[in-house]
Length: 128
Image (cartoon, rainbow, N blue to C red; front, top):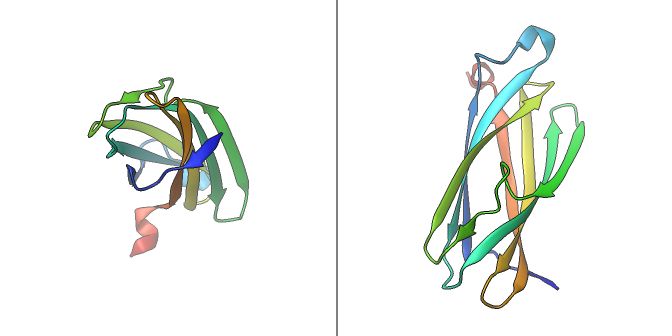
């Protein structure tokens, strides 16, 4: 059984535009992101799966599901943090991602769904 768990896991996201790999004239926009996961509970947790919904400015949706993140299923002890970097490619200079992590409490052998609120990507030139 999967239970909701939000307040004991803190998710922080930082995004950036990758101008070196992007080709705006070809509608190829690369964004990097760093996600930090903090286990604020008193139990060890393991990140088992991820689920992402990626939407560009045209409303085109991509759904991604898989084991772990960047090839790992990290274990976070109480008050531990885990950070990883990845990227996303869009056909538009604006987009967003939202999703969830499936995490297991290793002491109680229970699974928890950790929602990840939408975070946005925007090419810096559009902000001025």
